[in-house]
Length: 237
Image (cartoon, rainbow, N blue to C red):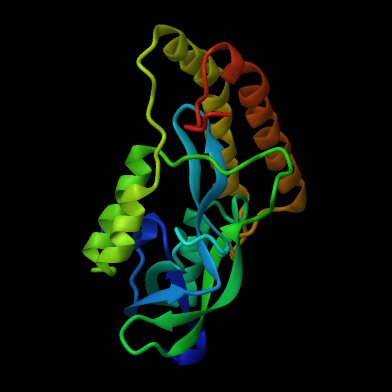
């Protein structure tokens, strides 16, 4: 295959895990190498479903805090077909958008250009949320499988996660919330698959609908359910 048809994709979330990226999604990387992006750090700023999977992995500009690590991950060399398949599996441009960044190999420190995913947009009312323990476990598992440096694995292990409450009131709130929003989430995911084009993109009107539903869901959580039943995103406020 012509190298012009290949590109490096930088995975930093659950796609580092072989069972997720290669087995479940059917992606066949031509090469892979460990890398870091020095300009950005890991953040869970892609909101999803309260009381279940509140925050998904994204990137943000690296700040000045000593506790922050440049994001580490796996650079996969993908065909155009596999890259498009990956985009479709990640929500077809609904939750994420593709950007190009400079990565550095962890073996020889050489820089190269990678395509990676960040949150498609910032929502003024929506903050970063905690990842579920299930989702964070996949990220930690992927980092361990790929032999990401131990210091970064330890950093991942310190990231707080969303843990369900055992209180009856909280469980009632979760049940009521999911009775309404889970079916909508299922319909949205189905629509995303059916409406995406050959490049893994959906129409603009669908993005507007998605944004309206996402913001409505989280506003209902933040200003109603979290007050009555308790938070479903791991945050204290």
